Length: 164
Image (cartoon, rainbow, N blue to C red):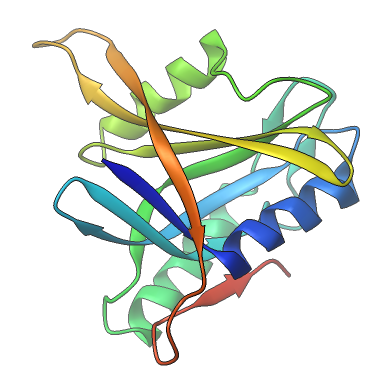
């Protein structure tokens, strides 16, 4: 399984990570599923009322959901919610216990959700990606780390970056 990130999406995550550094930031990833692969060609940023902390991040959920509805409608459903992304400034691209709980919450609404973590500092970011999957009935989500590749999206593909 591979997580494919459009170059514009990866660049925007890094740009936002650098803007908010040394605080965490994040948002939503949009795209589609191709078998077990995930192709992310869209990004929604943290939102104007997001809370950015040294070791935590809380998005502006209402703002994000409104952008998601707009994008879903504008692309006739071509771009759908895949999962979340966030940064670990001066850290490593490894899921924390809080990240695992967040992924578990997302998994209640989205089948096999994606979690992407950018770790590093200002202009040097490492990317780690995980897919959640229930390990049994009413058990916690387990996360498997997946290969991440950045690619140039072909002309005509639905690509959207919404970070107002």
